[in-house]
Length: 367
Image (cartoon, rainbow, N blue to C red; front, side, top):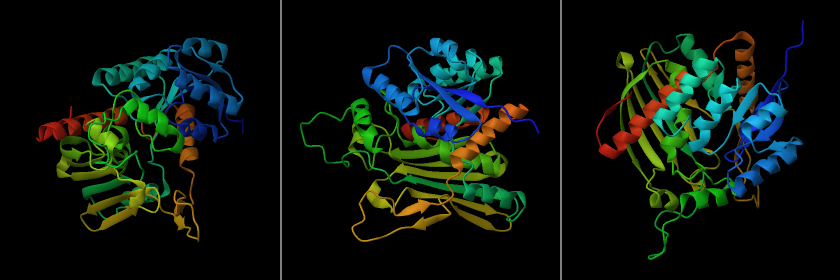
């Protein structure tokens, strides 16, 4: 059998998360070749990019097109601030690069639609980073395909991140100015309490709903027609000061009479032994399933355990490898990825409608 080809990757900004690039590099068919970004980004952005490049022993070239010329690559991995996702992905697609992108897809409908058009025009593959290939989710998919509970009638997902985001709501002293979103996210990056890094404040619906809505699409394959949502900055002062939600509920009116619901939030580290509560509930014509996203896992408890150390730890940590492998298969076969651009666009539209519903208090059609 001929040896399968390897793919060289450009890490296009790494200021949001390093885990996407690291996850791709964990697969033997992907090689990180260069880190790049726009030349006019702030100094802190250049610093993070350069640190990552140094750690991996690859060059940092702060000019996207120059980097593509100097270091030929087939794949661009986008992990910039959310508001730059579409711009960087469009430029990579126009250069003929396949794209792996961090969430969310984008922050503006016109930018998202431009990205969809670019991907279709240049015929490159796209993978939105997701959690659909976790063992528990795949097991649920297999059970549904086997008809274990019959036709699905309803689906609910809990997606609560047990992470802090600075001081609790209500702790800002009278007379002090509101917390600046951008400054907070930059400072919080080091200990992992940052959320949607960037100048534009994004709540949990915009930043994290890709995950539970991705589950719903994978398990049901059913489009969402209309949503009704409620949201609030309930836990964290930085969310309250910037008028974005850290807790939300969404009801989904889906095709064929199916009903979906999502409860999502960033609920603070003290709320859970580790990670958070992430479950999927499915009701079918002949039974029901309850899936704990984190299983399989082990619990670890001992005297003088550091407060920030996770008590519950996953023991099937192959998600990143499986996502990279899925992307490699799509490149090999000209097939689809597990969460491609059209699914990501549908999820963006659902979140957009949920945010509008939260503002207006009315149901909103998904466009």
